[in-house]
Image 1 (spheres, helix red, strand yellow):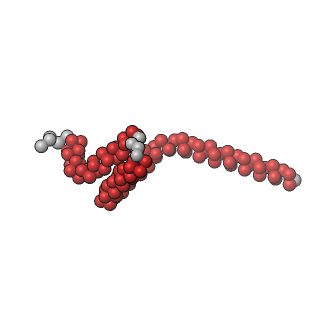
Image 2 (cartoon, one colour; image 1 turned 30 degrees about the vertical axis):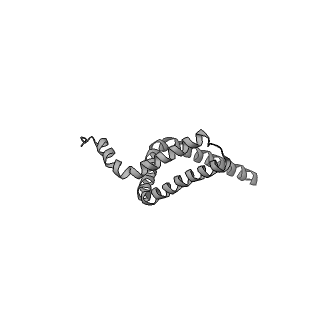
Image 3 (cartoon, one colour; image 1 turned 135 degrees about the vertical axis):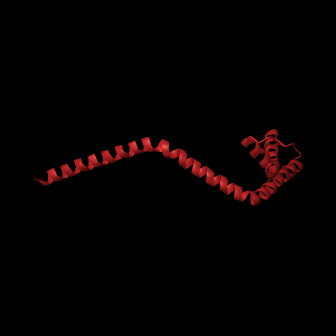
Length: 123
């Protein structure tokens, strides 16, 4: 055999190996991903929710500070420029305030929401 035949055979074997591995990967992704993705997503969401539940104690006061600082900044800018803030700014700050109030009230709301989800009669 000549060196040229060895190189040609090695190239052909390499090409077949790359093609086969690519096809195997594509089949694996195509067939396994629809089954694995929901489990991975549920695990990730569960982990994030668990972290948020633990972070509630320090995130809520931080949100109160952030929303208060936002309103103070808007008031200061309004006073300095002698202009009324844009409606969108007021709407977004109103939404942020509503979310903050809901976060503050959540310990009182949560038992009722869970009761409704479980189908327990209202008291």
